Amino acid sequence: MENRHLIIGSHVSMSGKEMMEGSVREALSYGANTFMLYTGAPQNTRRRPVEELRVPQAQRLMEANGIADFVVHAPYLINLANTVRPETRESSIRFLIDEMERTRLMGSRLLILHPGAHVGAGAEAGIKSIVRGLDEVLSQSRDVLIALETMSGKGSELGRSFEELAAIYDGVSQNHRLRVCFDTCHTHDAGYDIARDPDSVLARFDRILGLNQIAVFHINDSKNEKGAAKDRHADIGEGKIGFEPLNYLVHLPEFSSIPHILETPWYPDPDNPGKTLPPYGREIAWFRAGRQLPL
Ligand code: FE
Ligand code: FE
Ligand code: ZN
Image (cartoon, rainbow, N blue to C red; front, side):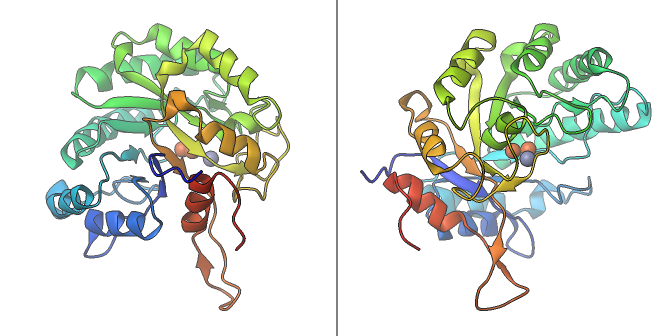
């Protein structure tokens, strides 16, 4: 049962002369009909002006190929929960406001954000700080929604439980502009039994946040055991979750209109040691087919 309508893609890069046009080309090379990008290097906050990103060219290419939607991921070093170093928090807020505007100008409605890490101040202080930060960011931006990602709980990361995400929703004034990015590797690493009982995990999510709050999935296998609080992604079918539960989630009809994004690691090229290759083309083909096709 080939599923053409499944909205599935991967993280793609944006660099060189082609910029966003190159991102779309990369997505198309994998057979994707959606994609996720960072507006610059995920590890830093240096950003080129949106006018240099070849957005109109990218949008034309998307339109010509039936890509209706893509998502943006905020860089990792943004930390709205850092009450220990107020400068980090302040610069995070300013950067996020700009990032919301870049996301809007690039033509996406969804910015994915790691809620933050409390770096020793405790979960309660961290969540309060995230709430105040989001209030500021949302009041100084428009149109774009923020999707809080479910986290693995490594270090002092917040958002490792659905209850922590709900506490953020409860505090934020414009919480109608919040959504969730459900990462399968992270929820597994946080202790949810995605591998053996995805229905119960989703039922729990539904009670606490509501399934309609999931605006995007990150579909990843995990290198670690359930509850390891590690966050190490594995290629699809190569980890502790396995292909079948991920395939089941990807094909749930209630999520047929939202993007499913692969963030699986590149693997070593058998013909060219030292080089790596993206697994996305074959993983997208597997999910469209509903089974792992022979390599
Ligand atoms: Fe993420
Ligand atoms: Fe993720
Ligand atoms: Zn991760």
